[in-house]
Length: 350
Ligand code: DAH
Image 1 (tube, rainbow, N blue to C red):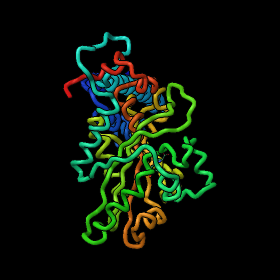
Image 2 (cartoon, rainbow, N blue to C red):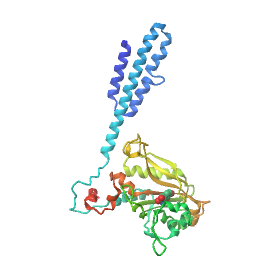
Image 3 (tube, rainbow, N blue to C red):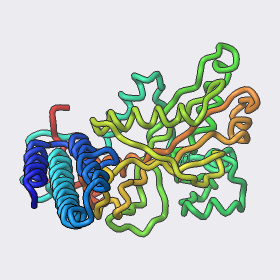
Image 4 (cartoon, helix red, strand yellow):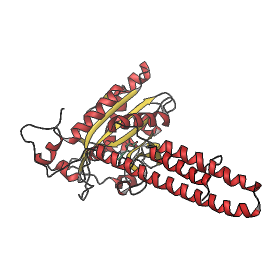
């Protein structure tokens, strides 16, 4: 290879050696292989050479181009691998076999995550509501635009009690009461409704590592004039970035729930691979976290709020899933096991 090309190659190698992040790496790629890059310029300049010179030089420049592309590719793989290692090592590890600290009590991981979310929402002006575990059919379904015999009821295999009441199958069951509780203040004093309500939910699920008949959700609603999907995205992104202590990317996909229109599934960039794709995110780079949407006019109306004047968003965050992701808990059944040995792993400064 001619001198000039060799020194260009050395230059690329030494620049790559000094690079430790993906942004700089891309700058190097553009500087050499981009449209105005120096290797591209060499190829363009060949038109001034004689036929013979062009043949030899062309082959050499192409060789250099292929080598540079490969070196950059290898460096890219290397940096991504390091990034993944960093992510993994920064995640708390849950080790059920490590010795239990039974000297003092500990908070349940769900309590820890719930309190953390509550604190974050409190600083954003949300009130925290409590709600019973036994509710009526009206609260759980009818008020949420799910009339009797609606097929959406099949999605939740509900436990009914002999007296016709039921164990709440989702925290959305509290929406109607919350809207009614605050609608007067909204209408008379222009005070937006901003509330979250965490709670235990029940469904007749066959249990396995990912399914339990008893789990926790945290519902949230915000209603005011001119509330839009942007408000929803903002609050979710802020909350999740706080929970995971890093900037979380979110995306919305369409999803159907009778009580919101439009309805979405909110995904976050995978915490393990940072969005590159790995077994934890089924190689998609995204994790499904939270269904949400704009509150359906029928639900607002049922809560005493005029949907022509007010709009709002709602979300149903899976607290159990969030706790599992945050603490790296692989089997949901550990959470309800009542095993002090498992749960005391979380004894910390709280
Ligand atoms: N309640 C739904 C469930 O458990 C989840 C949900 C979906 C809640 C959309 C919402 C929402 O607030 O907007 O399946």
